[in-house]
Amino acid sequence: MRRAGIRPSTRSGVTVLRPEVGRVRTVVGIAAVVAVFGGLAYRLGDLQIDPDPRLVTEVAVPVPEIRIPAPRGDILDRLGRPLATSVTASTVVADRRLVVDPGATAARLAPVLGLEVAAVADRLTGDGAFAYVARQISEDTAAAVAELDLPGIDLITEPTRDHPNGDCTALAVIGDVNPDHVGRSGLELTEDERLAGTPGRVVKEMSANRSLTIPGGIREIERAVPGSDLQTTLDRNIQFTAEQLLAEAVAGADAARGVALVGLPATGEVLAMANVARGDDGTVACTTRNLAATWTYEPGSVLKPLTLSGVFEEGRWGPRQPLEVPPSIERWGHVFRDEPWHETEELTPAEIVARSSNVGTITLVEQLEPAELESRLRDFGLGAPSPLRLPYESGGILLDAEHWNGLTRPNVAIGQGVAVTPVQLLDAYGAIANGGLLVPPTLAVDQIATTGRRVVDETTAATLLDMLAGVVDHGTGRAAALDGYRVAGKTGTAWQPCEGGEGYECPDGGRHYTATFAAIVSDARGPVLTVVVVIDDPRGEEVSGGHIAAPVVADLAGYALRQLRIPPSDVGDPSATPVRALPAVAGADPVESTS
Figure (tube, rainbow, N blue to C red):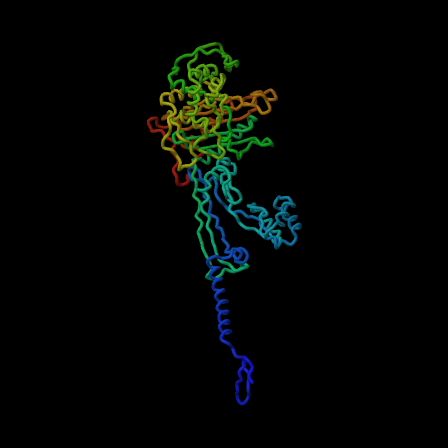
């Protein structure tokens, strides 16, 4: 008898029962195997074409990218001498996994770094394995940290900015970088793209624990592109001297702050831009704030040549035509006076400028309509930031003529009721020096302009220059005179609104003055330098621009002329061609100038 599905098999006389595999079962088995392998193939293809994002984020081993910093370009002076360059400094870092006792480690480390123990402890106990503890420390401090030999604490090197001519030299102009070597103020900020270069990168496939590079894995290398150097128009030695002379003057006048500027009017190059301020401890030192471009003030009489320019340009009054000038006049209920007091007398415009007569200036400027006066001042660059476009640069304050009242025109005529920056004054006086052409100022050698914009005609500019020379020869600016050179300039001693007071009246009954002297220095061929010195809120016995600003102009201009090797007109062979200051040349080899 034979069971269903079983067939007998006889081998060596022994009967063996074997299962009988049906065709249906064979087909089903083969189909199952095909389905399994087909599903696997589909899944593999699906992962290749459209990978599951969970696998990328939760399972895959990332391919790390290492950023390679680009060397930052140097900031150079006009002769190629470094004002800011990059060096390496030590930085204290921690591997929190290896710090045995954060509290004890912080207690030993903090005094060496000059930090609070709690602050260091916080950095040792935060999230993640890596932590900065103190960045870019001095060599002595780094050596002291190394001697401690603390578990989990290490030293690495980072690039930092160094100023070879001293940390104060052009500090507000050059600016600084943050700990990551990115510009955050001054030229370091505005020219960051040029200076920074392009970082490099290294991408390589690593093992899961990142301890080994996978042979034949992904590997990409992009080299860093170094940043470009920035050659400025600044002269390192003139800048340093400007800061020293200015600090001494501000300290001597018991003043709050000061600005000194030196420029080459023919090219617009700024040779020095010094800024100093009195600190809370009473010490006068360089400041990080670029007062030359960001601080505005009412300039006073130093603005008179600009307001008078329109009178001569429009032919409303002749430069030699006398004018009857009383000791005072009343406008819109306010009395304007001359100091010192004088009897009514006839004065030419040149005498009015030399004596800085408020009454005479107002009377002449009233020959212009308000809109004409406003337009003239805007032509000189007032009311808008200069082409330097420095960080946070101010455009000053100049109201549209349609908003003027009966007091605005006489006030503006004598430099009150309008606010300017020292940079704007340097530009405006440069236009007078250039025969009426306003050449855009610059701090970069590769941006020196070759042409200017006409502000007044050559005749008017020459008239103003002669009048300003009279101020130094026999007027209020005698202290700015220089042997062998023709110095033309104007004093300004202006009232400023008082904080906590009412208008120009200060709470203590005094006044807030600002003393200014703006000068144009010429050799035998014509103007070679422009110099502006501003000293704010002097509290000494003398507060006028002629007494405390003009002497600084003379000393600074004299030094700059020696640095530029421009001899006085009465020295050497009278028939020889006078030496003129040449514009800086990009890429010039460094040259040590004499003092």
